Image (cartoon, rainbow, N blue to C red; front, top):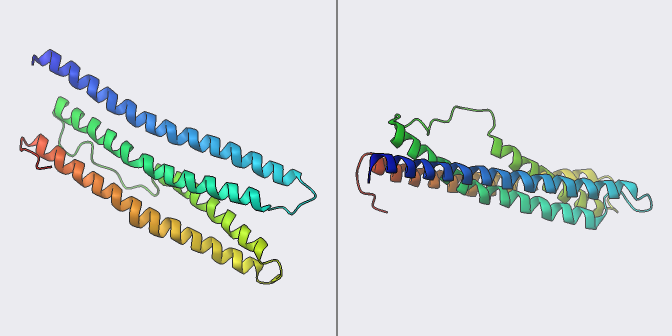
Length: 194
């Protein structure tokens, strides 16, 4: 293949990977926008109803289901995002003869942007569970807030500790490692044994 043709093909592939990564980001942002709109409408409706208790069961159940869907959606979109950004980085490194670790350096941050989305859904689902249990403990008036607090902490522990840290972060690390091995083998001219 001619050098000019090869350059154009690589440029096109590079652009497609970045467009796919941007598309994944936009999907997450649009889902979050719709989620906030729906939750806002549900809470406004609940605040507006004066004849029932503040936290009605159906509203809390809907918020909980939407929060769980958002939490899992966030992580199902994370792997394609990592894949497309890594592939775009690999093309950029190979095309412009940049150092191998150019695209892989991730400076230390207090919190990563994708974690903000996860925490939004974790907190909202935990609040909805804690208020459902708070309403269940109607006869136990002085235990109600303790039950709500324990439910909140248990829900945060399950979603963050088990799903986020144990399952999702491990899957992302595994994906990054596989891509690094594949791209390093490609960059060094070795054949990949995948």
